[in-house]
Image 1 (cartoon, one colour):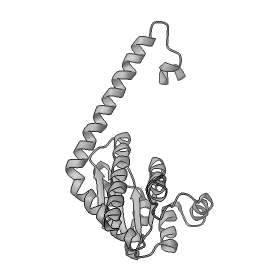
Image 2: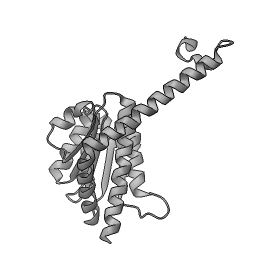
Image 3: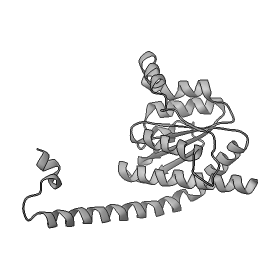
Image 4: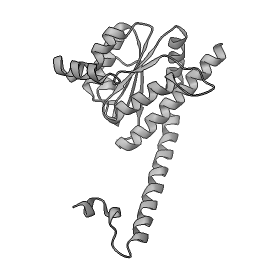
Length: 214
């Protein structure tokens, strides 16, 4: 079974070159796909990304904080975004940002006592204010806890940002997202790669806007 799933772990004699050629072709094709998708995102979403960055910069300038959240791979992406804003590295000032997945005890307590669909909304209800930013990430746009988190953020008057793919799903329908950035793809891998690019562009744009304001 393992040989069928992972043939590169134990290639038969004489198959190594063919296997390497297949891997090379596959890698090159995936690279072409993500480059093409990034160009499409720039064309379709460029003005929306710029508007979103402007709103984030204004919120940070007013003392706002960024709260990020998501599930699975989107959870790690959200944590990476929070870290990027909070600790961008030498030569750049950090901005207040927090991942709502960082406190495992709190996550498990809310899941156990209330339900997983409320883990982000409850945290935002306790921590968020009208000057803050909520960024929810979902490849499908259908994660109920992300939708409810953004709905709670909207109720609080926060700037709300939603990153999704596959048409936007419930994030596109819930009416709680000020800045919805939908990656035009149905591939989870390509969506997440493009979302990571969008988040870095947002950070660079926000940083530049704040530096110019100073």
